[in-house]
Length: 227
Image (cartoon, rainbow, N blue to C red; front, side, top):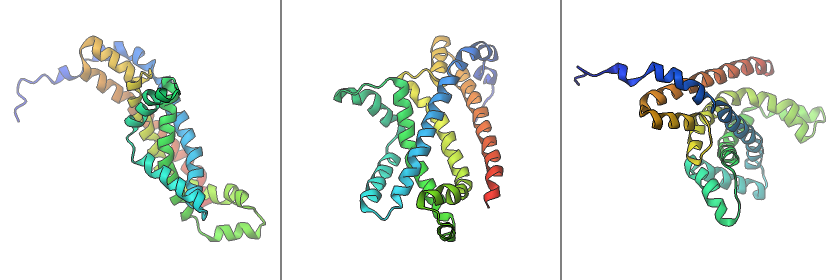
């Protein structure tokens, strides 16, 4: 392939990137809000889904399985459209930010549930027996003995889910959430330089994910004492 005469410098306008950076970063708080709130919701709901999925009760197990299957099989963008544009048809109106948080939280909870279920099943069954010897009830055993060990196992895949949520918040731009990518699109359309702006926003997402990876390392060190 002949690249002679191709202006690689034209791919990225440094001056435009620097000038646009403050405006684009105005979307960072919203990106963090949607991703953190959505992930927090996913962690709570995902744990209960994992417990229900592993339950011996048919009434708990099968609804959880159906929910997890549906959410894992539904594209995030489609689900955001259902929440933001579809629910008003039945009289439920959500603002864009609420729809985004619910969308990311509900779909991510299905993936979190499978990670939690795998992590809980990886904890030695003898730990439950030890908890019974100590006269711990089910929830006390789960909170004080099982979960601390399961968290260590679940951390790497859970971190990947969180990174995916952070990056997927760019989809919220299509329902008018003023996050990073939406701000980027405004400048790209105004300045007719989409390549510069898309590279810029990619360079903003990168350190966010690096920070999440660092947090994972610190949490792994903390929970290593439960080995």
